[in-house]
Amino acid sequence: MTDTIVFWFRQDLRVADLPGLHAAAATGCRLVACYILDETAPGEWAPGAASRWWLHHSLAALAHDIEKLGGRLVLRRGETRSELTALLEESGARALYCSRQYEPWAANLETSLHNTLAPRGIAFKRFPGCLLFEPEAIATQGGGPFRVFTPFWRKCCRETSPAPPKDSPHKITWFDGPLTSENLEGWQLRPTSPDWASHWHDWWSPGSDGALRRLRQFFDGAIANYDEGRNHPALDATTRLSPHLHFGEISPRQVWHAARAFAHSKPDHAGQVDKFLSELGWREFSYHLLHHFPEIPDKPFREQFNKFPWVGSPQALRAWQRGETGYPLIDAGMRELWHTGYMHNRIRMVVASFLTKHLLIHWRAGAKWFWDTLVDADLANNSGGWQWVAGSGADASPYFRIFNPVTQGEKFDQDGIYIRRWVPELARLPDRYLGRPWEAPEDVLEAAGIELGATYPRPIVEHREAREAALEAYASIKG
Image 1 (cartoon, rainbow, N blue to C red):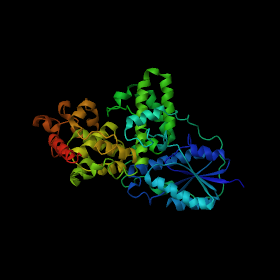
Image 2: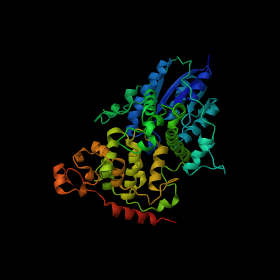
Image 3: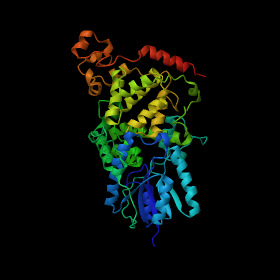
Image 4: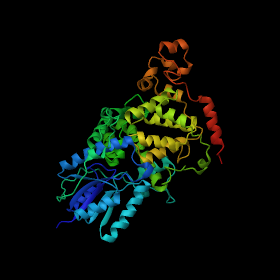
């Protein structure tokens, strides 16, 4: 009888350019493709509501892609080790293949699986596929991890270019025995009462086809002005590939080589492509840090921030979450997040700065909110980004960089398109007062149909006072 291999899908929900799947197919063994929904772990970092919505549609797309290759995706729900062990026994498989993950709980699970399966004579093999470079492969001259992005990315760019991506395997011998599989609809990953994501298909197309389509659209348009355009939230000037990359619907190698091919065909855009790839480099850097410093989702990277005097006002946090701070750019960003499951990167920095520096609320509170509401919620990127803005992370933004939410809007939303879209109650205000409605004369407010404190909130903090309080708090921990 031909041996059997179980391929365990994780955050690699695609069939193209997947090293582990190619390796399994190349053996000629019968293949079981499975996905395990484990809601017992990892505790507080279980997928948030927005991620669960995306996961549903991504798994549906993956199942369809596997069916086109002649197989089927087996779905199981429960504790991962128990479910995989049962599936190995039911199929008689002598090997378990998967793609490597880098979250602390994922790395611990991989070690546990190896220790459990090896005595039973079952091979457990992990493969790359989620990054351009494995975290251990990029090291300083002293052999340690990098703590600053620029030298890290410079070292990456000196490495051998990532291997070209591969199409899906041409031939797979599928396991044809009886195996029970749960129904995706039965997992109830999508919201129902109410269905607050009913319109999200206007914004997103989860799955590999959607990812490749987004990439093509980016190279057909936004790449031409990426360096400048990516800072303006009203423009469609970014790839929006982040959720596709997080769920592994497209590989970083596919993105890398598509970008290099585009730069070769249009040399005048080479600088824009380099900037775009450096943003992909920040994703690599975040995973590099998470692997070498697995405590960063919970603890400040810079130890002196253990003594930072966070305020932690529940009322202020709630106003921030609801987009009711009285600062139009902040409120626009938070409402965009709730409405679409996404927030423009420039705005992410501004709202994070506002929470941690204007309100002096711990960055972990913001990270947890983003974790639940972002379709691209990613432990490495989310933790690294929040710590960077707060000033406590690796290669962090200086503590004295406190984004002014008014001038940021005037600089990057000059025509007010972004604010008017997401804060429509201010739409009739003249541009002069759009970012600072509290300065508008009463007759201007009345003409615009605005009553501060009723139809739109007054600012919950005064910028100058908040800035001074933040600088004083940061000064208290300087060593």
